[in-house]
Length: 203
Image (tube, rainbow, N blue to C red):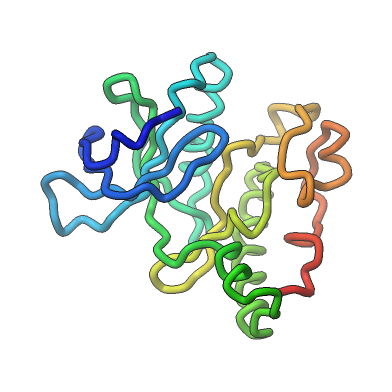
């Protein structure tokens, strides 16, 4: 695993200021440009050093490539990707509003305001439709992967296991089980329209 001794260190042009979270393939840090103080903070995803197979390496950078192709106001924007002193990483816009998972947890089981829920669903729906128009299937759509930018707009994030349909039809059965579609359990991908998550009435 990438260790927290990276905190406070420089990775390429950025100082890693704070740990934002860890996932299956990488750790995410809040970064600031080491020289240009007026540049906004960014999110920097660094590949876990324990993941050293070519397949894992390719999958990590695949997310950056897909995000770069999916330019849309409701999809997290990627800014850079590189390899620095043995650390594969990519830089994305920072979403200071946290995730939809965070908001749901703060409500302790109470529903989100209806108008806000509709706005979130519309924005993520537009981002998801754009991805589908580009033949990209996310495969891990869940509240933790819906982020909010400084303006409060919803952003579809974490394309780490996304796939492009024209490249494959048969895939491995990975994802978050509670949010996986029936065909995903069978190792298939499709652009069928489904709810963002089971129990959508909670929104």
